[in-house]
Length: 181
Image 1 (cartoon, rainbow, N blue to C red):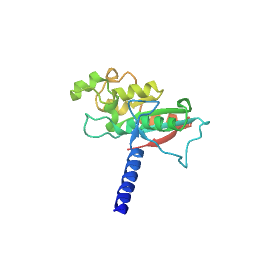
Image 2: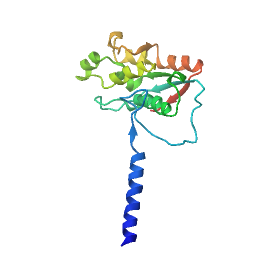
Image 3: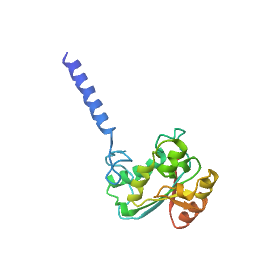
Image 4: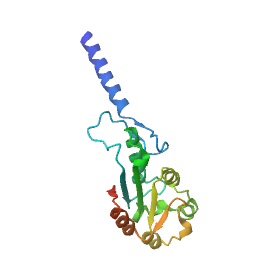
């Protein structure tokens, strides 16, 4: 009987311990987006005294236009997870380029409303990224292909001649390319 009780408590302890570590937490940089897992003593971290330049290339989006683009949320996660390990936001220079299916993420709520009959589910996230000094561009070629006009742009998104232009420009400036598509 004692062995069974000990076994049950051991299983409960392991289950509770594991479940507590597997929960996401809000970040300190972008509180409403980009929840992350706490990782204790990772073997690889960014050097907190170094500056990093990163450009995220996002060209996919889920087919459900009512949902936020998970790849755009990854930029918030990137900032939040590194802040957990004492990487200062000013040491992370981040650019986001939207094109292809992700072009609609750059629309203002008014333009999104016109096309999809709801507010853009990415507006608050893009506004939060802007407040965290993330520069956001949309591909002008994708934008024009979808017959969008400049006044359809979200206020925190800039128009690039093309995604290719933005990617080449920033990579020649030393930015590291990350694609999660």
